[in-house]
Image (cartoon, rainbow, N blue to C red):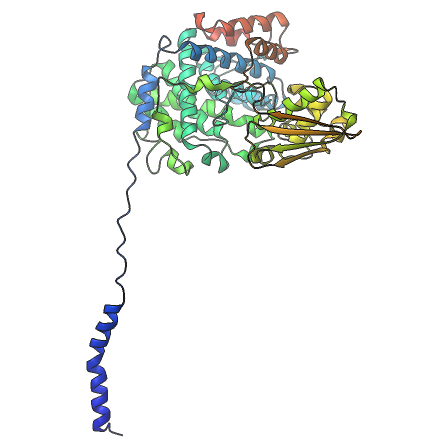
Length: 490
């Protein structure tokens, strides 16, 4: 049926009016907001090159006296814990597994008779030094700095003799590089699940080895780049032999990187900082200033700390509090009804194992740590053995330990209330445990720790000689003398 005239005019009117209507509607509709161009982040500084320049420019004479002193203390503590772990099942297995594949016998293992090529010796001494979780700790990052660095360069120093002064300079340089890179990415990198000693350790080992080898700036940059390609260690390994594998592997990886770079094996010259380099791949945080600010004038190694207790650092305040209450208030384990702790979240995140079965698991149990401190009045290697973990008195008491995550409690703090069976309560608040930067272990305490770790492995006269060599490190003509003096039968 055809359209009549009125319909046709109406349709035409609608058609003709549509552009005007659309225009009016468009005029009333606000224009879409124009997005401001994204502000581009400034490019990162060339930190790989900056670190290489620092490594090359460092000298023993240029180190501040307090830094030299802590370097010696770090080395002494590392030698002690490496001797102490030398006959643990973990190292026995590693030695047995690697011995058939070892190269020439270039370097020693502390506390043992076997000799290995320098790559495997670096790995094995690094493992040994971390078995008891008794090694040094850089509290800002929870890195155990000496293990990867000292293990690498002492093995090298046995093959290519170096003076004690040069060795100490390289040790300090390696610790500085390792910890500054850790500062740059902590805590995000650690929170993601990385074992930061294993991921930053290769940089420290590569830096120290590059220093001792006298690498050029270009070679040192390559060594750092090759170290960046070898991060190792995940936090899931905590409580197993795998944890001590990580600093050992970091030592060998860093030494490997420097050896390759010395022969001209190349890497990216910006391997740490670029978009697809180490820092931006492995962490959501990159604070470049943590590497550059005060480099060469402010030293992270001056902040190194040494453990009085053979376990995770976050448990130290609780152990300190328990020992104080036990000794000062004369509290016996059988008198305790409950032990209530206010703690930082990291305590339960890292050391929340409620029913450890082995000494290694006990190192990650706040329940065991507090219980054994009340039972035995200590927190050394013997308190984190299979024997201690399965002691019926300790097992009974750990069920009475109640840690509660409490807002406002710092990782270095604990608030402890012990309720006794007779209704009395005893309170201790710890702000800084013994062994912290604020309450450091004395030289005498470090010496006693060293001797205790060597007991049963080296005769007392030999242990005293090794201790004296560590203390006199800057005066040694050959730093490798320490390694040779620390073997069984030396």
